[in-house]
Image (spheres, helix red, strand yellow):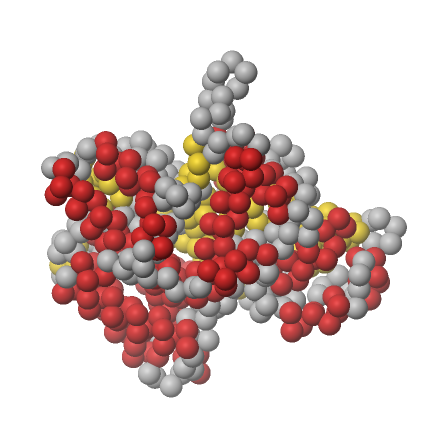
Length: 513
């Protein structure tokens, strides 16, 4: 399995518009986000997404359960933590590729389907960009203007998340998982940061940093995702058989426009997780004296020379920390352990991780086609050189936002892709297919195919269930607790035998696929 595991990426998109209400006031972001979701469902048509009135099944969601072994009382939770409450005013749809598109607080969010490799994570993340673009294009045809940005900060103090999800065996003690993962997460922006103009949550100080999220992290470990944001999130909501799996919900990462950066972000983290799972004694002992401060130190230094203090008194750079993890992963991969059986995905991730890390140590500029923060920094630095602009120049701030614009005519990162100055790992036609076709080797295939084949008879869905109507129009919930069950191989022939949900449900011997 090595770097292969069930994983996925959720991205909240920044949104702006010139639209106003009848009194000339700007429309609320939540309203605009609803327009985006409805526009995609309309433009995609029957079979490509569920009607936005279809429900999301919250039955198995447990956002207040903490991996440290307790659950906080609802009356003590912040309202933003109550993500398991049905709100009929919130637009929501499920797509035929198995993804969810909905309004999360004040942002349209694309949550990719479950995949089993870093490359597939890149492909379905890029498919989310096309989904968002098509919604915007449909709105434009109706005379409504909306702009969407695949970033995580507005430069004025607000941050919105890009969350990664990794299936991890429940047998791995969470306390050890968190402790052994924190130094890696502190350093990961060196290879996986999207770059940002401004230092501090409201860009109080001029400068450029590696990570979009670093300045918004305020705790080492915690349950919250919108306040007191932690380096390691403890939400214990597996969306899978709970006694077998936990879902590591990573909230510190950046939305990325560069394929290579996305691959390294999820691939390197999956490799470190496998190291923690299989060789816990070989994980480098790198406990940091102040991880929350270290996140900012690493992020604020594009030279990659700044050091952070370990608990045992060493001073290490971000590349030093990543080097220690990579060396341990390379040894584990060569150990002959059955969990590290060679595969193409692992070879690719470890090879590219090594190449990028070595190049960054020589000169970060060598990685301008692979590492997003380097590409952005190089572009902005050239502008500064030509125009004598300081890092707090409004034109640079605007260029930073424009980097992430999903409009191909405006987005700077997209223009670099087209020009071949940001390396692309996934062909356009493969991304195009991922907009409508689900991954074949996870339960996303069943979810997506239900949308495509039986859309009118799908009453609700979730990550681990699909609710279909039977011959009498009664809803029946089909549970899919195992993420690799209900793949095309497992249930393809079953679905092929049925053109209606009623007949499908009749054949199903139980409620479990």
